[in-house]
Image 1 (cartoon, one colour):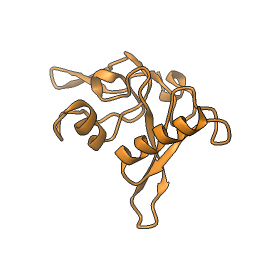
Image 2 (cartoon, one colour; image 1 turned 135 degrees about the vertical axis):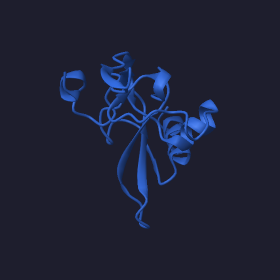
Image 3 (cartoon, rainbow, N blue to C red; image 1 turned 60 degrees about the horizontal axis):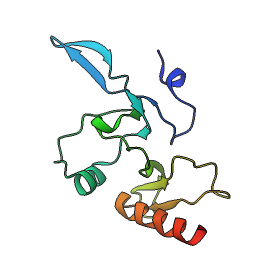
Image 4 (spheres, rainbow, N blue to C red; image 1 turned 120 degrees about the vertical axis):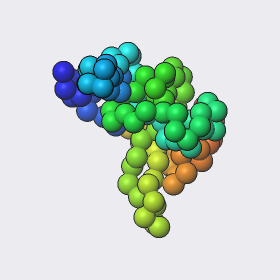
Length: 126
């Protein structure tokens, strides 16, 4: 099944976990567990969950919490352009995100700061 069939066409969408599974050194499909969004950046997994740099498997697309995806109620992060210095710009949103006019969001070149900016924007909106 394709990634488009598993998830909506939004960067923050969930679906089924796309982490590849292996058996006997051969591909054996994908994890398939429910996913709330894309895999969190390494710096967030290290800070928020205490993971080491190499703990998370690579996942392109939705990712379950066991493989480094966001848990229910946690911010969802996705790449959204570049900073003025050319680094990745992160956008942090909540799972009920609709668009930038109606929903709070946080942006920064550092994923942890983007989460802080989202929480600050949510506090102002409340």
